[in-house]
Image (cartoon, rainbow, N blue to C red; front, top):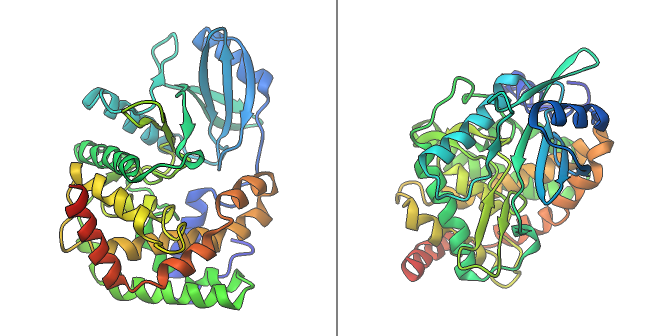
Length: 363
């Protein structure tokens, strides 16, 4: 892929496939809202005002239809229909298997389908409509330890349910899959800061030592893949803090321990004096639904650092190549290197001890 330097090992081909399969260099190609409105009226009997919503890859709109709201997503032109089908199938599976879970619902067309094909300049894109989840994004809230535990518990319940789910496309190769982190060392060359390169090298070292020798033996299943503060809607006025789990765009089959690691990557380092306390509260709640084995627990903080470092490494690379998403990308990653530095300053053995203590304190 032009502009991407990867290490000269045999993993170079894998790195290229990961970037291509993840759509990370795809240009931002807007879809005509008039076309979207026509399809919504024809296939969903919906009409109203479409408001664009910034997202990573999909073309997304908020539809205000009379007194009801919906979320409308149109897939990128280079995303395979089977991958969109995987995402939708996981959501519908959870709705059927555990309807009490607050997973965003897929709205069917009047013909009973879960999507509509959009023909756009010779390419095929997939349009889907979802129920709109009222509330604030977790990223906009300031949860206490108990609320963080509730957010963690919901992910644990999602993971327990997804153990029984499978799909023909679930073995997709995705750059965000933490199991591939050690194949992406070439990204460091695109980082201008010497201090950032030093931090990245230390995280790669930790990952090579702790995770790589065991990655093929870890328990694996389909996971959400991006249970982040931007994909969880919360209601601070309700005892049920989590109002909705949204955006299954990174759903894949991977090591189960990597699912909470994604969440932790968004929590570590944010409190300078205790950079891992939010992560500990989250994990305590996660383990109420899905206990983490003593064998896997030491890998969790290293995997979280790997995910955080990966986002930091790739953000500027993407922002330069996909200027239409630049503001969105940079806003999500503005403090990543600061948080890596704070979190990695705590010895991993101390972090594991904190996680175990949090398990006892919140279990």
